[in-house]
Amino acid sequence: EPEVTQTPSHQVTQMGQEVILRCVPISNHLYFYWYRQILGQKVEFLVSFYNNEISEKSEIFDDQFSVERPDGSNFTLKIRSTKLEDSAMYFCASSEARALEAFFGQGTRLTVV
Amino acid sequence: DQQVKQNSPSLSVQEGRISILNCDYTNSMFDYFLWYKKYPAEGPTFLISISSIKDKNEDGRFTVFLNKSAKHLSLHIVPSQPGDSAVYFCASGVEGRGADGLTFGKGTHLIIQP
Image (cartoon, rainbow over all chains, first blue to last red; front, side):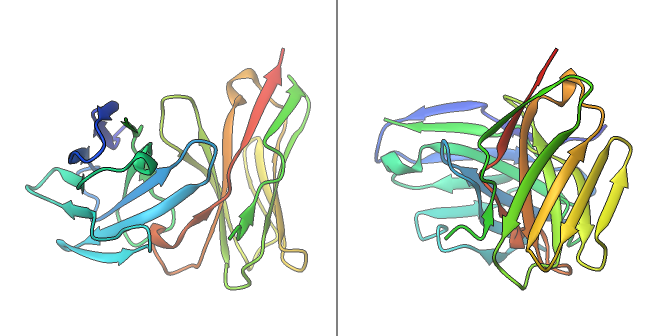
Protein backbone atom coordinates (compact mmCIF):
# COMPACT_ATOMS: atom_id res chain seq x y z
CA GLU A 1 0.00 0.00 0.00
CA PRO A 2 1.44 3.43 -0.90
CA GLU A 3 2.46 5.54 2.05
CA VAL A 4 3.87 8.91 2.99
CA THR A 5 7.40 8.58 4.32
CA GLN A 6 9.25 11.08 6.49
CA THR A 7 12.89 11.39 7.41
CA PRO A 8 14.44 11.55 9.88
CA SER A 9 12.21 9.92 12.47
CA HIS A 10 13.91 11.93 15.23
CA GLN A 11 15.98 15.09 14.96
CA VAL A 12 17.75 16.81 17.82
CA THR A 13 19.04 20.29 17.15
CA GLN A 14 20.47 23.18 19.07
CA MET A 15 18.44 26.32 19.53
CA GLY A 16 19.15 28.76 16.73
CA GLN A 17 20.08 26.11 14.20
CA GLU A 18 18.24 25.43 10.96
CA VAL A 19 16.55 22.09 10.34
CA ILE A 20 15.05 20.53 7.25
CA LEU A 21 12.39 17.90 7.62
CA ARG A 22 11.82 15.71 4.62
CA CYS A 23 8.79 13.98 3.25
CA VAL A 24 8.03 11.82 0.26
CA PRO A 25 4.30 12.08 -0.44
CA ILE A 26 2.34 9.37 -2.21
CA SER A 27 3.37 9.54 -5.84
CA ASN A 28 0.09 10.46 -7.56
CA HIS A 29 -0.97 12.93 -4.87
CA LEU A 30 -1.13 16.60 -5.72
CA TYR A 31 -1.81 18.28 -2.36
CA PHE A 32 0.75 18.30 0.42
CA TYR A 33 0.49 19.40 4.00
CA TRP A 34 2.56 19.90 7.11
CA TYR A 35 1.07 19.59 10.57
CA ARG A 36 2.66 19.60 13.98
CA GLN A 37 1.72 18.25 17.37
CA ILE A 38 3.33 19.67 20.47
CA LEU A 39 3.43 17.05 23.23
CA GLY A 40 0.05 16.79 24.91
CA GLN A 41 -1.56 19.21 22.50
CA LYS A 42 -3.72 18.84 19.42
CA VAL A 43 -2.50 18.31 15.89
CA GLU A 44 -2.22 21.75 14.26
CA PHE A 45 -2.19 22.67 10.60
CA LEU A 46 0.88 24.55 9.40
CA VAL A 47 0.79 24.80 5.63
CA SER A 48 -0.60 23.29 2.45
CA PHE A 49 1.09 23.19 -0.92
CA TYR A 50 -0.33 22.68 -4.37
CA ASN A 51 0.96 23.28 -7.86
CA ASN A 52 4.36 24.30 -6.55
CA GLU A 53 3.12 27.01 -4.28
CA ILE A 54 1.67 27.50 -0.84
CA SER A 55 -2.12 27.39 -0.99
CA GLU A 56 -2.90 27.96 2.69
CA LYS A 57 -0.92 28.63 5.82
CA SER A 58 -1.79 29.05 9.46
CA GLU A 59 -0.66 31.83 11.74
CA ILE A 60 1.92 29.43 13.16
CA PHE A 61 3.64 29.34 9.78
CA ASP A 62 5.58 32.58 10.03
CA ASP A 63 8.79 33.73 8.34
CA GLN A 64 10.74 31.18 10.32
CA PHE A 65 9.20 28.41 8.23
CA SER A 66 9.40 27.61 4.55
CA VAL A 67 8.39 24.70 2.34
CA GLU A 68 9.78 23.47 -0.90
CA ARG A 69 9.29 20.74 -3.44
CA PRO A 70 12.87 20.55 -4.69
CA ASP A 71 12.22 17.70 -7.11
CA GLY A 72 9.36 15.50 -8.25
CA SER A 73 9.22 13.41 -5.12
CA ASN A 74 10.35 15.30 -2.02
CA PHE A 75 8.49 17.87 0.02
CA THR A 76 10.48 19.66 2.69
CA LEU A 77 9.80 21.87 5.69
CA LYS A 78 12.63 24.18 6.69
CA ILE A 79 12.69 25.80 10.10
CA ARG A 80 15.22 28.60 10.42
CA SER A 81 16.71 29.57 13.76
CA THR A 82 14.87 26.95 15.78
CA LYS A 83 13.40 27.83 19.17
CA LEU A 84 12.71 25.60 22.14
CA GLU A 85 8.98 25.86 21.47
CA ASP A 86 9.46 24.37 18.01
CA SER A 87 9.95 21.00 19.70
CA ALA A 88 7.09 18.88 18.43
CA MET A 89 6.12 15.98 16.23
CA TYR A 90 5.89 17.19 12.64
CA PHE A 91 3.60 15.29 10.29
CA CYS A 92 3.59 15.47 6.54
CA ALA A 93 0.41 14.49 4.72
CA SER A 94 -0.75 14.28 1.15
CA SER A 95 -3.99 13.84 -0.73
CA GLU A 96 -4.87 13.05 -4.31
CA ALA A 97 -7.46 15.76 -4.57
CA ARG A 98 -8.47 18.68 -2.40
CA ALA A 99 -9.99 16.34 0.14
CA LEU A 100 -10.29 16.36 3.86
CA GLU A 101 -9.07 12.77 4.11
CA ALA A 102 -5.31 13.06 3.85
CA PHE A 103 -2.70 10.35 4.27
CA PHE A 104 -0.19 11.06 6.99
CA GLY A 105 3.43 10.08 7.36
CA GLN A 106 4.78 8.59 10.56
CA GLY A 107 6.13 11.93 11.72
CA THR A 108 9.47 13.47 12.63
CA ARG A 109 10.04 14.19 16.30
CA LEU A 110 11.98 17.45 16.51
CA THR A 111 13.70 18.21 19.78
CA VAL A 112 15.29 21.63 20.18
CA VAL A 113 17.78 21.84 23.04
CA ASP B 1 -9.24 28.20 21.07
CA GLN B 2 -10.63 24.69 21.29
CA GLN B 3 -13.03 24.42 18.42
CA VAL B 4 -12.88 20.64 18.62
CA LYS B 5 -12.89 19.08 22.04
CA GLN B 6 -12.29 15.53 23.14
CA ASN B 7 -12.88 15.70 26.84
CA SER B 8 -11.66 12.22 27.70
CA PRO B 9 -7.88 11.95 27.43
CA SER B 10 -8.15 8.20 27.91
CA LEU B 11 -10.72 5.41 27.92
CA SER B 12 -10.36 1.81 29.02
CA VAL B 13 -12.75 -0.81 27.63
CA GLN B 14 -12.88 -4.58 27.92
CA GLU B 15 -12.28 -6.61 24.82
CA GLY B 16 -15.56 -7.52 23.13
CA ARG B 17 -17.48 -4.59 24.62
CA ILE B 18 -18.46 -1.35 22.94
CA SER B 19 -16.06 1.59 22.90
CA ILE B 20 -17.64 5.02 22.63
CA LEU B 21 -15.42 7.99 21.94
CA ASN B 22 -16.92 11.45 22.10
CA CYS B 23 -16.16 14.74 20.43
CA ASP B 24 -17.74 18.19 20.63
CA TYR B 25 -17.26 21.10 18.28
CA THR B 26 -18.13 24.75 18.51
CA ASN B 27 -17.75 26.10 14.99
CA SER B 28 -21.08 26.03 13.13
CA MET B 29 -19.24 26.27 9.81
CA PHE B 30 -17.93 22.72 10.18
CA ASP B 31 -19.89 20.35 7.98
CA TYR B 32 -17.55 17.38 7.68
CA PHE B 33 -16.18 15.28 10.48
CA LEU B 34 -13.50 12.63 10.56
CA TRP B 35 -11.93 10.20 12.96
CA TYR B 36 -8.26 9.36 12.74
CA LYS B 37 -6.50 6.57 14.58
CA LYS B 38 -2.88 6.76 15.63
CA TYR B 39 -0.55 4.06 16.87
CA PRO B 40 2.71 4.98 18.63
CA ALA B 41 5.51 5.92 16.21
CA GLU B 42 3.04 6.14 13.34
CA GLY B 43 1.12 8.96 11.77
CA PRO B 44 -2.66 9.37 12.05
CA THR B 45 -4.62 7.04 9.79
CA PHE B 46 -8.01 8.01 8.44
CA LEU B 47 -10.70 5.79 9.91
CA ILE B 48 -14.18 7.03 9.08
CA SER B 49 -15.96 10.26 8.24
CA ILE B 50 -19.42 11.77 8.16
CA SER B 51 -20.95 14.68 6.33
CA SER B 52 -23.39 16.96 8.09
CA ILE B 53 -26.18 15.82 5.78
CA LYS B 54 -26.11 12.48 7.57
CA ASP B 55 -26.48 11.53 11.20
CA LYS B 56 -24.84 8.13 10.98
CA ASN B 57 -22.15 6.42 8.96
CA GLU B 58 -21.13 2.82 9.41
CA ASP B 59 -18.07 0.91 8.27
CA GLY B 60 -17.74 -2.58 9.66
CA ARG B 61 -17.19 -2.38 13.41
CA PHE B 62 -16.98 1.41 13.32
CA THR B 63 -19.97 3.74 13.39
CA VAL B 64 -19.90 7.50 13.66
CA PHE B 65 -22.96 9.36 14.91
CA LEU B 66 -23.50 13.06 14.41
CA ASN B 67 -25.86 15.24 16.44
CA LYS B 68 -25.76 18.61 14.71
CA SER B 69 -28.03 20.38 17.15
CA ALA B 70 -25.77 19.40 20.02
CA LYS B 71 -22.59 19.85 17.94
CA HIS B 72 -21.54 16.43 19.08
CA LEU B 73 -20.23 13.35 17.38
CA SER B 74 -19.26 9.97 18.64
CA LEU B 75 -17.38 6.97 17.38
CA HIS B 76 -18.65 3.54 18.34
CA ILE B 77 -16.46 0.47 18.01
CA VAL B 78 -18.27 -2.85 18.38
CA PRO B 79 -16.89 -5.27 19.37
CA SER B 80 -13.67 -3.76 20.64
CA GLN B 81 -10.51 -5.68 19.83
CA PRO B 82 -6.97 -5.42 21.25
CA GLY B 83 -5.74 -3.94 17.96
CA ASP B 84 -8.09 -1.02 18.51
CA SER B 85 -5.85 0.26 21.30
CA ALA B 86 -4.60 3.57 19.92
CA VAL B 87 -5.11 7.31 20.15
CA TYR B 88 -8.24 8.47 18.32
CA PHE B 89 -8.43 12.00 16.97
CA CYS B 90 -11.63 13.71 16.05
CA ALA B 91 -11.23 16.29 13.27
CA SER B 92 -13.64 18.75 11.72
CA GLY B 93 -13.58 20.72 8.54
CA VAL B 94 -15.57 22.28 5.75
CA GLU B 95 -16.49 20.08 2.81
CA GLY B 96 -14.90 21.38 -0.34
CA ARG B 97 -11.82 22.57 1.48
CA GLY B 98 -8.75 20.41 1.72
CA ALA B 99 -7.07 18.94 4.72
CA ASP B 100 -5.62 22.39 5.38
CA GLY B 101 -8.99 23.24 6.82
CA LEU B 102 -8.99 20.45 9.38
CA THR B 103 -9.19 21.24 13.06
CA PHE B 104 -8.20 18.39 15.34
CA GLY B 105 -9.08 17.53 18.90
CA LYS B 106 -6.39 16.54 21.39
CA GLY B 107 -7.17 12.86 21.08
CA THR B 108 -8.48 10.07 23.29
CA HIS B 109 -6.21 7.18 24.17
CA LEU B 110 -8.32 4.02 23.93
CA ILE B 111 -7.03 1.03 25.82
CA ILE B 112 -8.67 -2.33 25.19
CA GLN B 113 -8.28 -4.64 28.17
CA PRO B 114 -8.10 -8.39 27.45
